[in-house]
Image 1 (tube, rainbow, N blue to C red):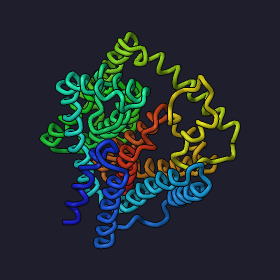
Image 2: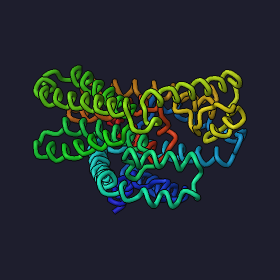
Image 3: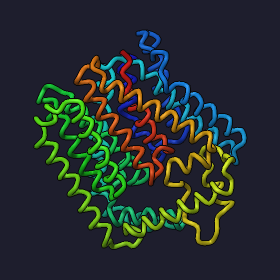
Amino acid sequence: MIWFLALACIFLLPFFSPVLLSGMGALSAYGVLLICFLYLALKSGDYLKKGRSFLLPLISFLAIIIITSFFAVSPAAAFNNTLYIILCAMIFLALAGLSSQKKKRIGFVLIAASFFVSAIALLQRFFYFDQVIPYMISQKPFFAADEFFYLMDIIRTKRVISTFATPNLLASYLVMINLLALGYIFSEDKRRNMLFLALPLITNSYCLLLTGSFMGIMSFLTGFLLFIMMLLNKDKKKLTRYTPILAAFFLGILVMVMILAAQRWFPSLYRYNLLFALEERVRLWGFTLGIIVDRPWSCAGLGNFANICRMYMPANAPESIMAHNLFMQLWIEAGPYGVLAFIWFLLAFMRDAVKSIFDKDTFFNFAVFQIGIFSALFAFLVHNMADFSFFVPQAAIIWWILCALLINNK
């Protein structure tokens, strides 16, 4: 019963949107999920084995963000965001000890949920956007000017968001799930299961194109190339057998890149122009670097990037409450020690993962499943070099769960 409750919570995770639920609603959902997996771990004895090299850097990172919260510009915002990270990390640790069979079931549930997320996106694209413009215009007095024009840009360009707050957040989520699905498909021996999982993969890929997120598609391409390289090193025979399918999928991604580049090179709205978006990112990164240089050893506390920006905001500063770069924002919010601790965790964790994938004692099918997850985690980090989904619990919780699924706890 508890196991099915946990799976139901995982299925509903992408629907725990800050747009639909309050902050306390999402926290409650994560708390229920954590309690379920802690109960399962205690009952079955499936604990994460000791001696994992990533445990010390993870504990160090969590300790740093807790300490920095006491000295934050806004302690309330810092403790709230820190609580989300701690919950995600605890869910990661509770899930990591599960058996490989249970982890594959969780992966299947995540893929199944994505199909419904994409279905909502398709309904938005073809039936919703044309109807909502008059309503949005009537609600203009209740929105801030920047917020209103941003929402109208999304609606006019028909960039789907599904249950997420922005198209880029949806893209970040779809990229992870697509690469997870690839790993799951190639780890299956039954052709019926492979065909069944291909449906959400194709639907998600089309919705990824509809998000209009160029960085999302580029991170997907990066993750897919990594998937092929790791699969090639693991088993050349399996890669050779599925070369036509992988080649067709690769060409499909390239077509997506070209279509989106063409759409965003000559858009109807200048804010949707690819060069305009790049210039805004470069300005924002330069602005963020200036803050880091001015206060290299300080920390603002998680969730306080916007508060620090207001102290430095010149008339021509970029309008954003996020740095659109994971490590720059972590530096400002958690300080240099927080960034170093997180990088330490990533390196230790990925080193353990690579050892497990290419270990001769690891079952081949589970190793292929791991390759898909590893590619998904890497693509998420690539996307966060120009975005901020790591700091949004709705997308970040999926990343932490995939981290847990990657661990082989044999």
